[in-house]
Image (tube, rainbow, N blue to C red; front, side, top):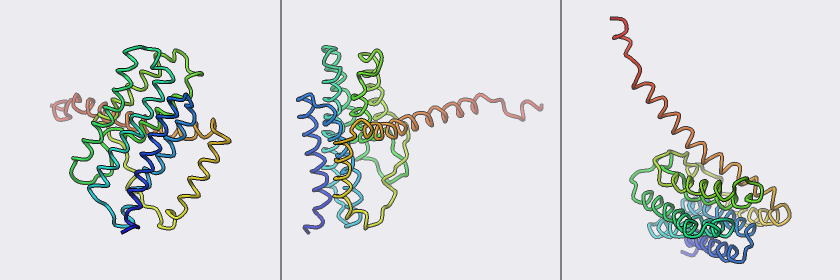
Length: 241
């Protein structure tokens, strides 16, 4: 019974890190707040896999995971962005800050009531959206027109979460059981790398997450373009008559 509690312990660890990230954002320690969100992403990626390995899946764990994700990848990244730039925009900044976790909650609620299991997600997963937002906030000093670019980027990520854009589901990828026993070492290595090479590691995380978000959008636009061309093409039979 104690072993089967491990997945929920990982989920609660993710929730703890989400709360810690919010506190760090209030203290204006934005790089560490972003790092905390990223470590939470690792725990979030493991809890479901560990639950399946231990045959400990449950509706309780599923709901707990969703509630934790709203805090860690909805509220925490939004607070980071609010501290970095949105606090300068008055009530508009407050609305955009609230809009992101609201869309994240809607996306999770939709996912929880979907029937069946597919190889893709409908809408950008909140984990990826939150990771992009948390690390994107760290580049505010090198982005031109930051008061426009970052809020627009945040709104776009929020929209992608509630959109019908399809994204690959990497949760279906299995890992060897021996991998899970290396989790403490992996987490320790990540913390050490972030401690001494924070700027490099933030880019290492930001680039693939941003590419993932853009990949689904690009494929969706391509499918629509192909469908539009197909619908407007004149049938061959009518041309030959």
